[in-house]
Image (cartoon, rainbow, N blue to C red):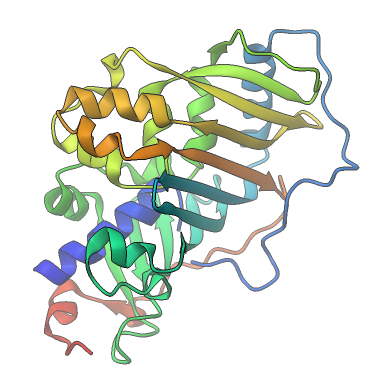
Length: 302
């Protein structure tokens, strides 16, 4: 079952980070237009952000680009996910890529000849299942999808998967827990809030925090907060960004992996959201395209 476990890890890296099939060519928009009207408000930033979150969720649909980087002394690895979601339909999709800088950084980290292009994946998430396809799979796999339910992922990784909450991007949903922050600047479109570290860490586009949970970390009682910047345009959330390095270090210290965390100099993470309320098309793979876990194990490699 090792191959299935590896594929399940890919699902945790993609679907359970709030993602799911790649957007059709040309459907994922870029950052919010600079000509859009910034939201200027006299209310507290956390109140403004929560109101924008409600409006964003009420729009039901959206497209997003998530970028999360792990900055090390030897370089940085960035996970980039372009996707879309439909809250009413209970579906989300994403196309994930890994960008090492320098290009041979993955080999330096793992000690193996890892090609970042081979880590690309496409996933679809519904409220009950996740589906995964990787273009680097052998020819016999291509065009077919591995399907998993929450129990499959929990059994393989030791971490519970909540697909229903993953449909709406976790980097947005974490703002439900926003509180006032002492940080401020002169940009009226940027709100500064604090979010409990546990929610921020689980929103990272990485499985590392979930491994911490599997190791017994109690994120709810971590006692740390993360400073978060939220750009609000036309009363809607346009972007969210934060650096979770300090919170990650505190979490690592709790489970005795501080030495590994010390190698990380920054964990900048951001999401840009566009197309609020605009139609999206997220197609669940049909039964004829489903690759069972037993078939996956039997198919030849290479």
